[in-house]
Every structure is written in C-alpha cells, then in structure tokens.
Image (cartoon, rainbow over all chains, first blue to last red; front, side, top):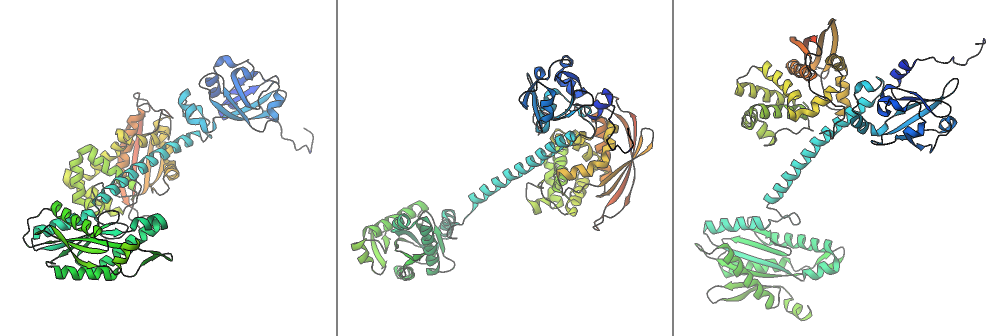
Length: 348
Length: 209
C-alpha cells in the first residue's frame, strides 16, 4: 500500500468464519454459478446445489434474471425464492468480491416463522447478532397477550349481554321497560290493595316517524315519557312496554273520579305540541284504563287484555281520550279527553 | 401487581387444587367481593396487597408452608400445559440450560418488549465457579425467590439438565418507588447439562397459542 492511500485493505476470511458471521451467505462466480454457501443456506438448498447456476436453485424475483453477476450488483435489493417446495423466500444484498465473483447475504424477512418451521431450524442456525430469535419471541409474546385480551373481551361481552337481559330500564326514555312493569304489576297484585292500570298508545306516531325521521320519533318518545312521568306521583310506575306503548300503574287509585283526574292531568301536559328541530310533531295519546279493586284475584294476563279492550275502544271512539273498561257491563266509558280531539278525527 | 401475575396465581390454585379451593381462597381473601366471580383479569393491574391476601388465604386454607407453595407455583408456570406459552417464551432464552441461565440477565428487557408494564424483578447471574452460578433477584415481591427456584427447577427438567438449586436467603430491599421489595439469592449447580433428553422445543410451532 502506498503511503497516504486511505483505501481499506481487503478482508481475508475463510468459509468457516464467514459462515459464522453470515450463516446464509451465498458465493457466486462471475457467471452466477454457486461456489459456496453458509451452513444454514446449505441445509436449505442441499449439498447438491454447489456448482449449479443460481437460477437452477432459486427463482429470481428482483432482478428477474441474473445471467451475469453484474446484474445482481446493480439491483438495489434482491428478492428470490427456493425452487420446489417449500418455496421459501429471501431478501438479500449482493456485493462484489475482490478478484472476481459476488457475495450475497440472504435473510428470511417476514417469512422467518414459516421458514423456521418448514426447515426445522434452531437458534444455532442463526448468527448470534441476528434478531430472528427475538422476532420469534415477540411473535409468541404478542400472540399470548392477544389471546388474553380476546378472552377478556369475550368475558366482558358475555357480562354485557347478561346485564342487558337483567336490565329494567328502557335506555331511550329512562323509564322502566316491560320487565320492570311486569315485576311491579306482580307486586301490586300480591299486595292486594287495589290499583289502576293505564295502557297508553301514541296516536299518529308512525306519521311523525315516517315524515320527520327516526330521530324525531325518538325525541317524541322521550318527550312523551317525560310528560307522563310529570303527570303522576313519584312512586307510580311508568314503563315503555313496546315501540310507542306505555303502561302506568297507579297504586291506591280505586275510583273513577281519581282516575279521571289523572287522565285530565296527562292530557293537560300533552297540550303543547312537541317540536323537533323547529318542526311540530303532532302526536296524541289513546289510553285504556282498568281499575283493580282491593283483593282482586285477576291474573296479570287478563288485566292486560282488559286494558287492551279499553284502549281499542278509545281508538275506535276517535283517539285522544281515556276509556275505562267497565267489567260489570262489559262496556267502556270515557273518563278524559284531549283538547281538540274531535277536530283531530275530522282532519286526521 | 400486574394482572398476568395475579391471573397465573389464580390458575395455579384452581388447576393444582381444584376450582372449589380457588372459590374458597377468593372468598377468604376478599377477591370475589372486590372483583366478582371471574377473579383477576390478565391485562389489568392490581394493588400488591391483593396478591398478598390471596397467598395468605391459600397458605391458611391449604395448610401448606408459604415457601413450598410459592415454589410449586414456579414449577406450575413451566410444567402445566395451560402455561405452555410462558414455557416457550423462557425457552427462547437459550439452546441449553446454561445458555438459558446467561439469558436471565436479559429477562427483564425481554419481558418489557412484550408487556411494557410487567415489572419483573431485576435478575443478575454471576459465575461462582465452574458450572456454579449465583442468581440475584432484586426488587421482587416478598417470596419471589421461591417462585424463581420452582421456575428454574422445572426449566432444568425441561432442558434435561441435572441441577441442584438452593435458596440462599432473602433480604428486605424496598424498590425505588418505596414499595416493599426483596433481594433473593439463589445458588445453582449444573452437574450435567444433558442428563436426559428433556422436552422438545421448536422455535416456530404450527400455531403459537
């Protein structure tokens, strides 16, 4: 070397030392014939690969072919796979050797797990500096952690379904739901002190929902719920039992006069038209009522169907009114009426 | 303590002694009242005192010495099929048991890569002579050294190595954040690294569970 020459002197490594540093090296002559390989790559290719042209052992993807070593050297990044099965893929880099020929260093890249499994590789097949083992380790740690998270999510989903099944509240209106109504009805019947049951159905709700949209419909339901709540005592049960159906249970309300007062209060609260985003949502209430005397032995189902009969009578009589089912005469009788209910029939 | 540790303790008690025993331990330690019937979740953190009350309840209900119960927990972590992922993660440490011992220095870092908030004790392995090692565990919860002895015993068996382990004592050494911690010293003599075939370990399995 001349004085002042800053070029690095070349390295002289035996195949053993090179193989220890790069167990997947591939040494080619200038015609791209395989001259030697690191121990791990040799295991994958088989001893017979030595002396063969590169493209007889590998399918080249980048570059597409390598008739001459110079083609490999020009490629920024090599991609190739083993011919035959498994078609393990590699990425790699090619550098020129002093003298002639090319040195390739290959790596499995993301396919490392498949390659390790398919070729039965172990830690000693990788250079100590290779991060492949750490990658496999992380893969398993990640899988274990994700498994725990998945199991936890399953448990939480199950808990939520159970909680929903046991819930007694209607999420839209904050009122009780059908389950809450049935429980309260059961308590009242057992208590035997007598009560009134109102079955309430919204009039013209479908039209509001169809013309103004679901959010207007939801708003109407929530607003009606709040007005019904304000129309009765704090201890009375108000429940939404279906799409636009409500039930009110009034403990201790035993006569028509008291019931009529409740009906008047409800229609009074309903007098102002509900609006949604500036649009009026004209809905009314039809109410079917049943009085249950003290010590009544009527069943829940029978009661509900009597209230239905009264509700049906209310609808038939022109909506917007409260009808009481009179069990003695099997007829219903009007107890309260909304303002303008008659006009509604004419126009609605 | 991290939920993974607590969940492992819960699995150990119910797998090794039965679901009824875990039910009693959970009731006795207040876990059921606090966390519900499912007990610990793996991916949550819990106050250290909960872990301690579970161990105390198990010691009382099972009438087992605390140290040997904790050592059995360590063995369970490696040898029970439910804990296979953990066994595999530890086997990544080295190709032989001796190789694995040297990897213990990195265990904290490795576990940190996988679960950043899993605060494992600091482990330092030093050579005390030919085939003789001293493992120092710093900052572990009370009794961690005994769990570690169980882990090492089961892993030595897993690798097929003939090893003598000795728990050489424990000192109180609180952690940097003021929580109580200990320093455990464990002596390890490797008599024969290939005493029997051990259990198979493939770097990549069909589907890592």
